[in-house]
Amino acid sequence: MASNTQRKPVPLAARMERRIDALNGNVILRKDFRDLAGDDQIGRGVRTLVQKGKIIKIGQGLYAKTTVGPLSGKIIPRKDITDLAREAMERLGVEVVPTRWEKDYAERKTEQIPLGRVVGVNKRVRRKIAWGGRSIEFEQSRR
Image (cartoon, rainbow, N blue to C red; front, side, top):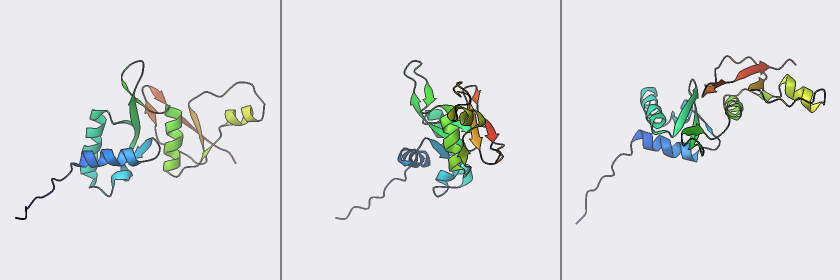
């Protein structure tokens, strides 16, 4: 007797979660899910994953993988916002270059270690990247 069993469809959010786990890096773009569903469905799936704490929003169409903070027990990004901004720019096709302060430090023109939330880029960036009250500024390199 042959059984007529049909597989239950896997919810979109679950498929998106598997895709996130398989992705290298820590930045997720909405376009990473284009082959799974339409824009509206992707939006609903992303909202579900944000509510579950699987990802957090760091910018328009930009999300970051999360972990639980060891001290606070709250959901936090796996990487610092500056590292996430650098990775996001590379994923968006913008070349990341050293900032003026990083160049000065490398050339020993200053002993002040550059610790700011500034990311050097090769072209103008109007995008906002922020999380937890910390935002990133972009410095366009003058060539």
